[in-house]
Image (cartoon, rainbow, N blue to C red; front, side):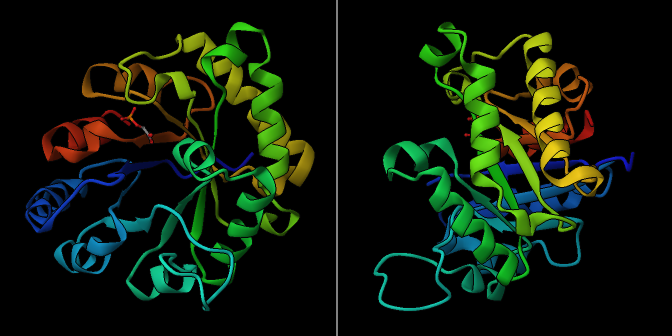
Length: 247
Ligand code: PGA
């Protein structure tokens, strides 16, 4: 099996004004030491300037969402082509905050994945169960269903990541046990194998949800964990670099 290319991606969410470019510069200065790829996904307003701030370093940039269409009358939306034009290499899609706050379905996420591919972006497709779904014993079924529904067949042979982010672990300080993470990541890998065959083996399965310097090494060394999607801790260069160094 081809080993996945690990990725540590920072999801800045709706955080970051011009002053945050200093943090990005610090991340750029230290990112070369990481064993895998390092990316920052800032708000769209900072994407181009952040790309310029980290130019020449190992840091990749990404968007946090895109519209399925390449252009048009979609007030407030951003096209995948616009992200690519602003220097992005990646785009986060189907984050639980968009699934919950913007009613995004698996089918819509799958359309956005096609848009990302059209624009030459590597999609990071997020999946994850709620606390109630886990307590009811449905976590595996919910997440593997999201994987099947959100990843179109066109991804076969293309670069992409899946990010497993249990909703109850995002921004809460709670994390699943290592064995819960491994169980879910193995189930996601099996679903990818069943859908795409060996063509999906290079796709890393990231873990996301309260990753911080103190738990990064244990999480990143768990079976089938190919990196992390980091929210809060990615806003501070020192913390983010410490997480990237734990790969
Ligand atoms: P967190 O967020 O690291 O702040 O929990 C992760 C995410 O939502 O991607």
